[in-house]
Length: 80
Length: 210
Image (tube, rainbow over all chains, first blue to last red; front, side):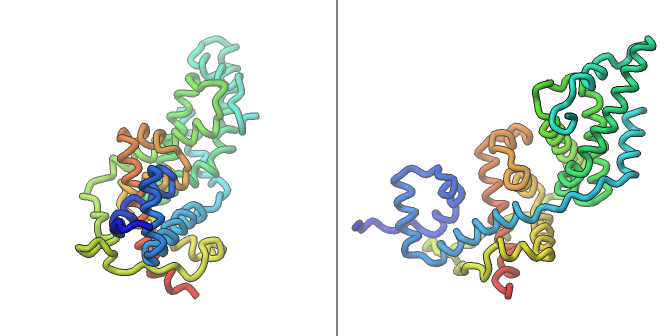
């Protein structure tokens, strides 16, 4: 048990990326985990932040066939 | 072979480019044919990359064309043990960034309005809530992939470009810093802000998914 004050939400959310990348010192990570254990709002933010990254990765456009007119234009320019 | 590694003949033929002899003309002809194969093989994937970065189909095609011209001119310098697809990928990204820089006429939109707000005591102004479905389930729906892409498109370019390079093109922080000419720390800050802004834009849609 510790009677140290909890880190504020602003600190947790501001350094969330470092937390997820495992770049916090052990002491700092301990304080982050202590805050997250009592703050559902920051836990929700953390979860939705991770979902955001996953959604960005998964929203990739499909690979379409190359348009013939574009290929011809590229070849025409490169052949001078 | 050309799909994975550039063949020795294509780079050798381009190194010989500009020769006047009949033998050289034959080499040039072979090189041009190989270049056409290269263009046909790689255009679908590279066009997808350009479409991600550019704001219109026309600009994406222009950027890709610029990239192939650049590749055509520097094939002789291509490191023969390097991966051709990676090399072309970087050239396309550079062509897109160059074009975006020339298009940046207006002051960029401020990202602050998309960042979380806090009370004086450090708590969030508006409590965050988890989303009703996991991203994996939701992304099986085509329209939601479109929504995510439209939200990414709304981000100011400074942050959008870093998010695309890191989270989608999967370049390292150091590679992105080098391409953009900024410090790795600046890349990390922009990425975090870009992700936060994207989360804010998705939040009202994701809370209400049923």
